[in-house]
Every structure is written in structure tokens, then in C-alpha cells.
Length: 444
Image (cartoon, rainbow, N blue to C red):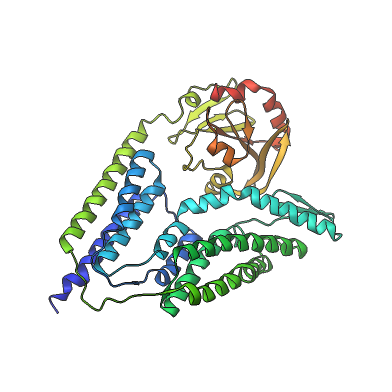
């Protein structure tokens, strides 16, 4: 019994050390959410030893790659992936190979995916709302789509994209797809090849688009208001019928045709206690060193020199630690956020205002002064403000994230204008757009 204690406790100590470092390093990146809770519930069905093999160092390669990317690009996503792969390295070193599914799980539950879905699929969700409105018009229903809310002829108005299953449908659907694959592999004892798994997730996304369309259509048809049982139940049934059922059938029959039986190594695996511990601690030291170095540099970092030099007549100016510059007068609160790289979060107002305790309602894309912008109403207790945002590089104003991320030349800054009176951005923006010098100066 004494000889088995190192084999039992040693990997647990290393895994605990990585987890504690991860909690410290990612405390501002991985925050408590529905997605995190769902991931913890699904994890036991995903992390299985599929091949009891000898010591494997294959997971060290992505650890080195992601650690290097984090150091040079300072993107927390790479630190998150590096820590996850380091966990996998320890697991495979002591217990055996875990297959490809845990790597997919790591990506599906990354905060970056949540951000990507909520930002880059926004135009898709607006398009679905317009399509639902057109379909209802075709069968005689007088309903008008205004962004993420609908207005009936009797004045009834409600959102379909509140913080419910609908908003999280893509994330929830991908999580359930991962769970279905894990359950099937455990039941059948067969692993699915990577090309088939890619097909499953591609089809899952297609089915999720269809499920979201059906959800919006039925919610509008039955006027199922947000925060009601009907609103949530409709979303659940749309997800189950349009995505979960067909994906389950695909995985079930795919495993029979393409599944590969998981091998067993009856011999006692070779475990390298010393080398595994040294490499694990060394990689943690590299990550911690990179984190503290980059954190120290961020204190004196100039995020956007042109933006920080900008002065607007009639506005007071405040610079925040993250490089965001705030301009304020008696009527307007103006945030201009510095340009970001392709993989960085630009913290869109639809998410930032929620983080500040506001409800964000009636998000819609409108055209003012021949420019497309996004507008919304934000509420907190008895306070109501009107906000609008767009991206500006001095000559082009846009709401297209792909154009912002992939454009060359002068980078785009995000401009968020909030009216502190009841006039709303529709009242203030035309006057604001008249002064082209204000919009062009951040990129001049």
C-alpha cells in the first residue's frame, strides 16, 4: 500500500497546482457564468482515458506554442489554452491518452468563444429577426422587426434576445454536442475520427441557426414575453427538436460506421515522475513570469497614442487604465476605445453596460446621416439612457466586425455615445455627425 501512494497522490498534487495557478492567472478572464457551470457539469462525461499508454509528451507542444503566443500577443485566450493543455499533459503522463474530445471541450467553453458568438453572430441574429418578420407578414401578421425586438400593430413590444437560453443557444448547443459525443463514446467504447467530429460540429451550427429561427418565430407568434416560462420552454424545445435530436442520430449511426475501438494496454504503463514534475513546474514558472512581466508593462503601456492625445472642445476628458478615453459634458457621455488586434476583445457596449448593472434593450441597427450605427436603450433602476456605438478609422464608419478586424491601414476605434437626457441618440447623433473633425481626429 505504501508504494502506491506516490502513484495516487503525485498527479493530484500537480493537477491541483495547475488549477490554483489557473484560478490566479485567469481570475479576470474566466468569470462565473451559465457557460462555466454547464462546462463543469459536462466535464466528467468528456474526460475519459481512452488508451492506457506509456508516458506521452504530445500535449507539451501546444503548451509551448500557446505560451509563446501569449507572451508576444498578450491575449488571455492563449494563456487559457496553455494551462488547459498543461492539465492534459499531466493527465496523459500518469493515466493514459484522453483523445481529441477534451481539446474540443477546452475551445467550446473558452470565454473567447462566448465573446465571438455574441459579437460576430449579432448581424446573423438581426437577419433572422428580419426574416421572421417577413415570414409573418407573408401569412398576414402585422408585425415589424426593429433589431432584436418586435412591434405588433397593437403596440405590443418585446425582446427575443434577452439573457436566456436564446442568447446562449449557440454556446449551449455546442456544449450539448460535446456531451452527446462523450456519452456515445463511453457507451459504445469507440472513438470518432477528427474529420467526422468536424462534420458534426459544422452541422450542429447549421441546426442551431435553424433552431434559433424557429425559436424567434414561435416566440413572436405566441407573444411569449421574456422572463416567462413560455419564453424559456419554447427556446428549450426548439433547441432539442432542431439540434439535439438530429445531432444525436448522426452521432449514433456515425459511431457504428466510423467509430474506432479504444485500445487497452494491459501492461503497467511507464510513469516518469521526476521529468513530468520538472516540466510542469517549469512551464508554470514561464507562464507566471510572462503574466507578471506583461502586467507590469501594461501599467505604463500607451494603448493608442493618437487617441490619448485627442482633445474635444466642450468636453472634460478622463483616461481609464485600459486605454479607454472618456469625454463628458452636461448632455453626452462619450467613450472612445483604442484599436484592438484581430484576436483581442473590444468590449462592445452591449456587453460592457450589462457588466455595469444595466439592462440593454431594443438593440437595433439604424442609419443616421448616411451611416449605419447600433443603438440601444440602457436601464438601471429608475434611470434610462440612450446609447449608440460604431467603429471609426477617421474616414470610414461601420458596424461590421469583419471589416474592423481584417482591414489594413489606419485602425478602427470604437465610439460609444450615450445621451444623458431623454432626447436619445436619434436627437443628438445628427448634430454630432455634422462635425467630421471630431470623428476624424482620433485617426488623424
